[in-house]
Structure formats: C-alpha cells, structure tokens
Length: 297
Image 1 (cartoon, rainbow, N blue to C red):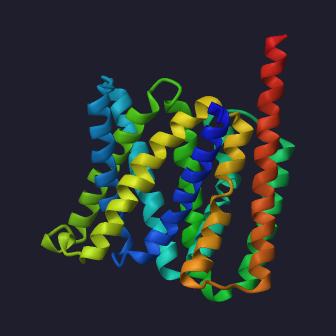
Image 2: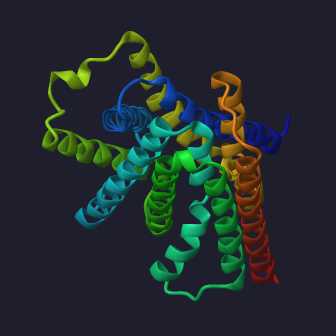
C-alpha cells in the first residue's frame, strides 16, 4: 500500500470518527456546557502529553498566546452550540447545519484578509440558503436545533478563518493544545459563574465517563493529530472531499444507531447544502491547483 493510499484511508477513518462525535454527544447524558468542558480539558491534556512525549513543545510570545487563547474561547462556544443543537434536535440536523460553515467562511475571509467577494462564493451562499430554507420548511418543529446549528457553523467559520492566519506562523499541534486548554479555562469560568463548577461537575455515570474519554482522546486529540499528519501525502482536493463527507457519515450512523428518520424535504434540503459545499471545495481546490501550476511555470 502506497503512502498516499494509506493516508487516504486514514483520513476517511478520521472523518468517520469526527462524524461519530455527534453520536457521542447524543449518548452522553451531560448538558452541553459540562460536556464541552470535559472534552476540551481531557483533549487538551492528552494533546499536551503527546507534545511532551515527542518533545515538540514550542515557546510562544505573549501576543501569540493571547491570540490562540481568544480563538480557543471561540472553539468552546462553537462546541457548546453544536452539542446543544444535538441535545434539542437530532444528530443529522445538527451536522447538516454545521455543514454550512463554508457559507460563513465565504463572508468572514474577505473581512479578515481584506479581499473582495467572488461570484463563486455568492453562488454557493445562494444554494446553501435554498437548502436551509427547504430544511426549515420540512422540519419546523426543530427550529431551535437549526438556530443553534447555524450558530455553531458561524463560530466554526470564525475560528477556522483566524486559525488560517495563526497556522502560518505557529505549529498546528501546539496551536491545538493551547486552544483546547484555553477553551477549558473559559468553560471553567463560565460554569463557575453559573454555579456549576462544584463537585457536581464530576458526578457522571461510569458509562458517561467512558464516552467522554472516547470523545476527548479519540475524537479530539487522536483524530486531530492524525488528520494533520496525513495531509502531507494528500492534495487539498482529496482532503476537502473527505472532510465534507462528515455530515453524510453522521446521518448514516444516526440512522443506524438511533433510528433517526426525517421527511423527504429534509433530505432534499440536506442534499442541496452538501452538494453546494462539495462544489465549493472542488472550486477552491481547482483554484489552488491552477495557482500552483502557474507559479511553477
């Protein structure tokens, strides 16, 4: 098996793990806030231990630490709204709404990088809007989940855009560790402010502890580290296409495990959203490939 083929299989395995995150969010009985606290705390600690074992910790300036910590707070808010969406609605709907993140990225990148909107992004945004409207019409009883899911997608777009700036000068795994630990600190402050940071925070069933550990170590630290490593052998198009399969994997897993069923309108709207996201990824990868080819001439 070639390195590229092995990396492709590993990436698809990681994407399935990412899709299973929504399943774990449904299986764990904790509310969204304590669930996120444990995810980022255990995930941050395990990532830090991995860096210590590899002796790959980097020294950062106070400015870099502050910026990464701020992004970590956004990550915490993203996961809180994501798991809250799952708690009040369903895994499939939450992941479909999260798939709209490229729509929001199309509007945040021009602001952060000070560039103009292009027609492709407006076209994708229009298609995603039509898909969301179709899902809304079909699943009106799950409006709360849709709003939380879209909020999660907007926050994902925000931290993805900022990470796009930070990762150019900071090592990715170190960045992930700092962001996770910062998210942990932010969640602890939030829970303390709400009076939920006492001994009750540790009051979980044995089953919940197992699922939380799987979520933090396998679906957060391990999946992230592997996803970074395999990108060395894959093209942007291959990685983007694989990652965009996450909602599809999650919908299939939720159907298989929880028996989630939706109306035909939901599947139509979800297909429009996912189709637009796939098309956007294909366009972006093609543009990057063309630009690299032009630079090589």
